[in-house]
Length: 347
Image (tube, one colour):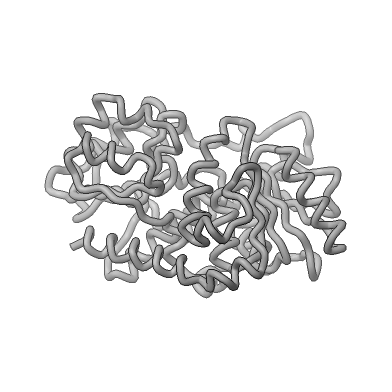
């Protein structure tokens, strides 16, 4: 149970990753196809600009195809009442990852993402659930009541671990985002090749921050490489723009970049998995400031604060030297600790 219907590459890959790792542990896995926010329709993407509309519609189709073909969704519903009456009788229910416990994200549907519809005979687990830096969910009666029904709880960021444990009375810890449970070879098998420069700086900007532009252009001047922008909106300062791609092509473009410049949590996560050089900038627009907490935690867990030029005051640049210095050992420990937790939770 997660936010898999968001038109967001990170959202679908974290869903796929958790499903894949649970299958490797011997389980039959389905994604509960519940989207209380309303299913997208083609008319939602019609704008005055016909080219922009066409791009949005094509991406909408790409995401729907990925969900249908890769995630084994249950019957689709937007109704909490329906899912209460028709909840499948699984042995385990897992909520997470992504900002499933963030009030700014789920709003009045927090009860759904607390799994209040799950049959009493099933075991409820939270894997890497995130509050997105927003503790308002913890102050609700829904959270206080429903969190006590969980078998065990893990959060993606350690910030609220103690508070959640105190409220729920359930042992709580922090674990890695599901994408980090898998390795580069797992994602390579899912990639789809697409046209791109032989060498390039990849820009994946969630909110149109000026700092991304500055750092990308600085890299271009230093390395004499073209900029390929795969953000939602085209950028006049990029050498080429790609706004239509499948989730599998998104992976390919990250994997084959010389450097990734991003302010996306999952853009950073896949860069780390692939061992890429990257610049990650703070996101400062569109309510994305909360994104910075999880990015800072990810950097610390995978590279150690002592290896970073600055701990996310404005941006962090991870060069080959830093990547080689950590040698993947911190990431591997983070991954194994989280996998061990999941195995125990599913006993």
